[in-house]
Length: 195
Image (cartoon, rainbow, N blue to C red; front, side, top):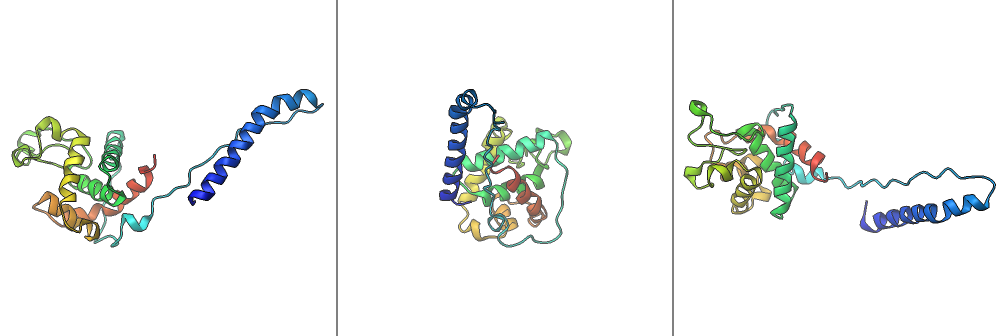
């Protein structure tokens, strides 16, 4: 819905509501019949442009996992940090897909013998590689902002396939693995970007 149309709908909804509040009770006392006034609801219909989310189409077979409340909270934290950094929906898709690959959107602490070196958090960032302290890296906002700072430094990241952009920041031993999460990441951004 364009801005002019949205303002018109909101203006009419406001007038209808104000008219019902001001005229409703007064009119009911002056007339023999009462009018059943129902509140007017305005629904925001802004949708994320799916062409922005997956501009190159998905690459290869896609994976999907069911998410619990903690993982959804981490999705929302990644989106909030992306917005705070001034980056767009595509950056959120890349961030969420990266986190899906690195941690399945779980804010991982030290995993003992199962740990990949000193990797921690949503993005499996390493304090020894300069990503921050263990406390910082396990803060979803900080970890996302650190990832996005790295992404901003990649010339042309907006025009790269997701797996290339993510790999350039993460330098993973499995560079093509990020691509499998692109559809789920895009679906999550579409669902939660405006919430």
